[in-house]
Image (cartoon, rainbow, N blue to C red; front, side, top):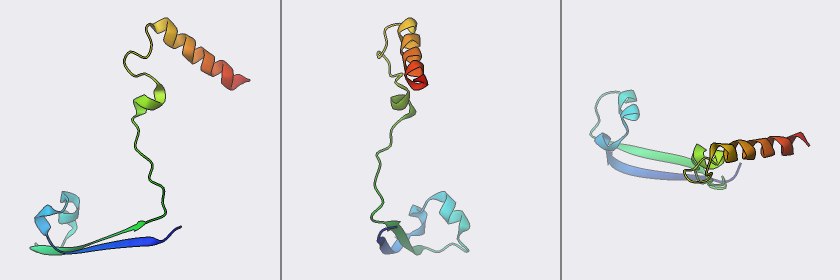
Length: 80
């Protein structure tokens, strides 16, 4: 685990907090202190859609037969 970074912001209007956080607060404070801690060394991996992993983006294949052929090739490669 790398170095922990900490960000503290005082006097944040409670109404700006996410609903899930507001529900867990006792009472109804007007302002709060927000503290965020995170691992500064953790790699940031860009999010990718499932579609990008499956290779089924529109227009990638021209026919169903081409898709089936590609899947068979992938399966055959993994069997070797």
